Image (cartoon, one colour):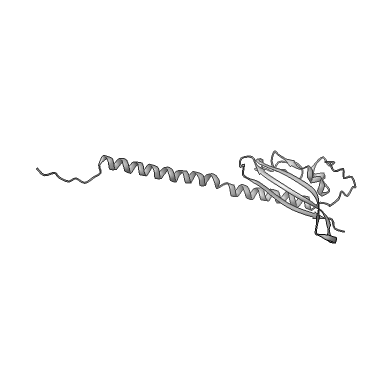
Length: 159
């Protein structure tokens, strides 16, 4: 009696094939999940940059010193719409979303937190020192712990 050769796979070969396919699919799925989870980060970062630029530009367009000569070094203005000089922005700490000039939350930007720090500095060196205000805007996001954007600008005293 001769043994006929049949074509096909043995049980061992099928099990090995299934294990290889399962490991490959698991690895590819892991890479796909990691990529899709991080794909929103660039958009969130761009939004954070736009928010920070808006706050920074708003602060730097204000007067270097209080036009009313009423600067107390504290938050003498109650509403951001009343801010009339750069040091007033040292009071900005919007932790419930980015706000417009009148204190209204900007739709879709609720997860962002914005704080502004204003410090007095001198720009230049030697006899060319010029008083200035350093404005630092920090933007963070509630859901993305590694998003911590900081923009810095300076407002110099112009004689």
